[in-house]
Length: 155
Image (tube, rainbow, N blue to C red):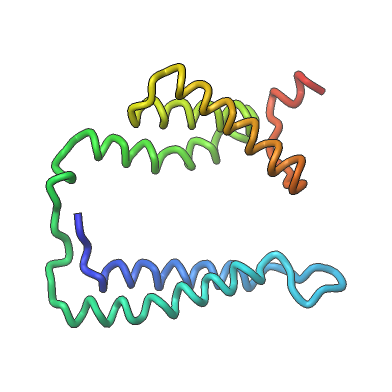
C-alpha cells in the first residue's frame, strides 16, 4: 500500500501540531528553564516543519491518493497490522488494573506467536523482554510503571 506523499505529509503535519500543542502545556520543572514538554515540543515542531516538503512533493507528483501493493491483498497482513495497532490500546486499558509486567508479557507473547515465533521461543522472549523493560524503566530510570494486582500480591 502506498499513500501519496501529500496525504502522509498532512498526517505528519497534524501529528506534529498536536504534539507541540500538548507539549506546550507542560509546566517547567522547578528551578529549570525546561520541563517535561521541552523535548516533545522540539519533536512536534520538527515533525511539522519536515512534513511541509513532503506535502509539496506529493502535490507535485499528482499520483493517486492510495495504491495497494500485492502484500495488502493478504488477510494475514491485515491481521498482523490490526494486532500491532491493538497492542497499545490493550496496554492502555489493562496495565493500570493488571500491571506492567503481566500485560507486557501477554502482548509480546501474542505478537511474537502470531508473527511466526514458536510458542516456547515466544514465551521466553516475552518473559525476558517484560522483566527487562520493567527493570530498565522502573529500577534503572525510576519511571513509575503500573503495578496492578501483581503489585498488591507482592506487596
